[in-house]
Length: 537
Image (cartoon, rainbow, N blue to C red):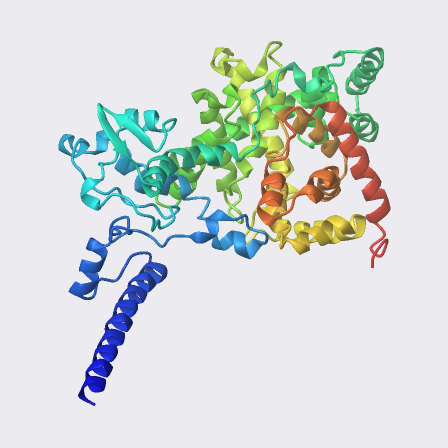
């Protein structure tokens, strides 16, 4: 009987030991899973983590939660949102938090050779395979050593010393270095080609700039513009299919309502409006540093260098100062909306067109400071007034909550559901909201989606339409979306769809493609504009 009790007691003690050990491991692993690093509440747990060789070292206190969703593609918006960092802050976070510890310049000299455990980044999985203990690991390698490691195997030689790396160390050494490159490689590669210049009047197929038909059209424009009172209806009719480069500046001034149709009054009106603009400069521009307006000016000052960064013309200090004055004066004179990001893009077509009046060579590389001061001032004033005329028709796009854009995006969704039900249902299937891609189309009038040469051609037609920038633009966006039908339906997840819609490959587009887009938009307008129930299901 005593033997049975003894054996029973031993079995009971063994079970208690095993259960306690399993509970300890479970609690520790649960701490990793729930908080991103183990909760070391007792000395036993600390000893467990230190002695267990399968664990790749303790996590630092400030390590964020590991995200296991990174390993698979998001198939819907909710999965994508859970697995994606804030796109606005991602560069700052990586530069400050992830890349800083591996730069040799940020490390004391003594740490380059000491043995310590590199911190894990949130993207790195927790590795439980057998590897060297914390004392056997090397310090974060320097930049030169890391370049040697990228092509090395798991067993390599660094500065004469043989190093055997575990899989977790290989991830530590390569993931942070390659993460930026992977993000860049995931975007479509866009070659840098002339974006303005004389290619604005060329087809993408390389057709001659001037044909017999083009010469005839140019003569017709010159005749209409030389009349004592220009016929705007006839001028719009001929401008719809594109305006010749030689007469585009004066035609835009007329169609926008900046110039009067009467030829005798044009010079007087130009002088008066230009003087009025520079009167605003003298009256208001000094207030940009006042408490009331300094935030507005600061945002403008930040946005200007981002305007068409691939075109050297807009990176010139003289041009950026012009844009700052134009945008600040417009914001002061329109307090209902003030300055809103995206308005800075709307200045560029006017500036380029009015600059081309004085430049025969490559516009995008032309040094604006080499022009006479009076010419620079005239270009600036004309750009301001024409942009003002444009924004007067779409100002509700930029007032509080931007109701104009909200209504246009909703109208685009309704229109696409009637035009192409397959695309509409495809977006619903992968939880793609129209606002996620079409907001920029409305806010920037497709300027971020098309090269500047195409935008100038597009605006020829917008100027010719009665409500080109507000009403006809909706049908252009619908035609633009349907243009990529095949590519859209080939995507198999939310992330792929959004990447496509935000990086559409239009870099090689020219007049030919824009002409076809406008023709399709006109067809849609003709069928649906005055027929609210047409094709409605």
